[in-house]
Image 1: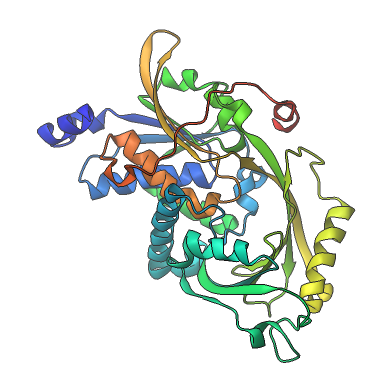
Image 2: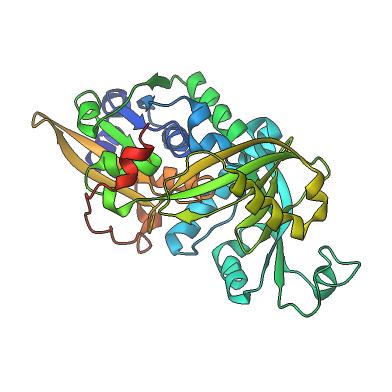
Length: 384
């Protein structure tokens, strides 16, 4: 809080003018964190830090570029609800002000499951946050005039809700454009460790996704890749998202539809979309909607979600090569919820960067995971 006190005393000029912030990662988490830092600086009427974002891969090759970004929270923990609320508020603001130009789209749809327990957990996680959340009725589920024509002898249940997508293909470039307009610099450079940036900057934000634990140096063993496959198809009639048991999905975005997926925890190959991947996904989905056997595939992508038991938003004080102290703020480990929790966790991280009050997180921040610096075999395979 010392920086905050100095800020109040000197009117903001002395403290924050000199604050230099490096963000590692150009994906949705890195871009969201830089955005949140500037948003909070403006809200708190303090001078914005100088921010530089580092990335070593072109945008076309990173996970965020290929994500449909439907708002849906996997885990209903209190901290995830807080992150989800703050993200939803940001998406609603962007939708009202920019509409689809921001990559944000308002969409309704359905989730089907044979597990009522799983669907009830969705209500707990975000049912009061999204729009129009309700259970599907029997006429909507079963029979020839229903949405799905499911056989009546099944135990399938369903929910409906309206929320936002934030398609990575458009959302991330929008955030980047906004950041550049506010003076944020982008540099393509491989960062081997946080200390090399600590020698140059006051604060280093670790938003390195799957490799965040390796870069942190104390958390590699708590990270695990989750292999996923998405197929982008041309289906202009398809206007509603549809999930079957959280793995067979379609998500319509502004000019196409994403179809998927696989969730192969711990897998780190193959690094290309295989014939078996396409056959598996399409055969599952065509059972739900036969019209999709006629769609045209536009592209496909393999990505590795940053699996972790919980999102890591944490502050540390470190030394750069034993000479200069600097602050590290971690923000990674979002699993498959990066676009749903991303801006919310970014606000938390931004408060740590700017030494602002953390009262709204009191009692809901989980205990840190034990230190585990074991580097798995997947690191060498996927670190290209």
